[in-house]
Length: 319
Image (cartoon, rainbow, N blue to C red; front, side, top):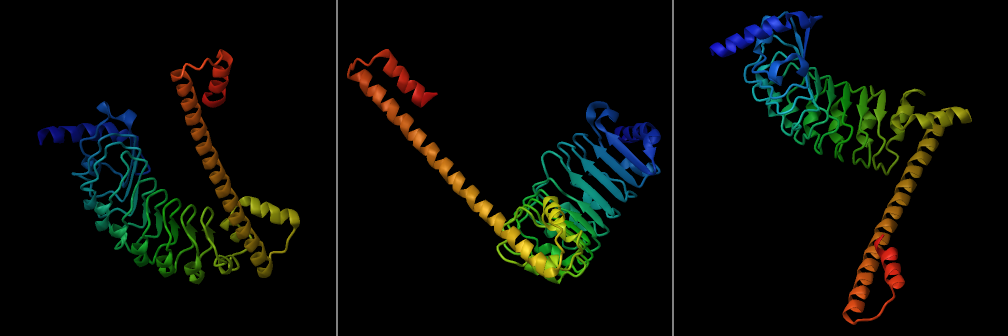
């Protein structure tokens, strides 16, 4: 206990000069032995925000009670057990740590959170988030999420990033009436029909999915000329400008129908090319095996193959 008190005193003196705008930033270069025994000492400093970068072995068993904003980034071997005590937090960012987070049960008690960033982890289960009803901005990109049903209760959410996950069913999102910005890129979507009733949706990103219907059309017709173009990519916008097309709802439907059809044709072509490559690799493997058998039989039978013929086999099948 005395050792901990002494550690906290040294830490307070060390970090007093590093505070800026009520924010304390701690990085690996600031800490002897690349280690923090506890961050509870932060309560004795005039800060409400703590940013920790590239510091190993962080523990949260003894935590500050006054912080409202916390960032933990690129911090290997961190132990987040105990962070559930920080119920005063309104902002939490935990990403790019090793090993990545797989379970976030500690977050279920942080009911005052309005901004949450758990991107670049390996999270599958979102149930610990279901009671965080004050959340307005959520970033869960680059995880292993399939089931987003726990999000249906988070009705105050305005910005939601689910980029690069394994999501197929987005029905729970239809309950998020305040949603203004949504990123669903790089998932497994076949339709976005549940989003058609979201009247406040102004920005939406759906590229790198497998949308097979025209459910996207009623969504884009609600957006203005600048916003709806974000659904796909900037190149599409350039094409429209070059052709000086008037963006009427009918024209939008035609353009996006063509775009969707083109995407699927490209996907089919890529699949065909991949199949051809696999077949060619199989043939090469079989030919190498046959060549080896021929050479083995020839040696065993004392067949006098010339040096050049043997080299020919080797060059054709083993290089």
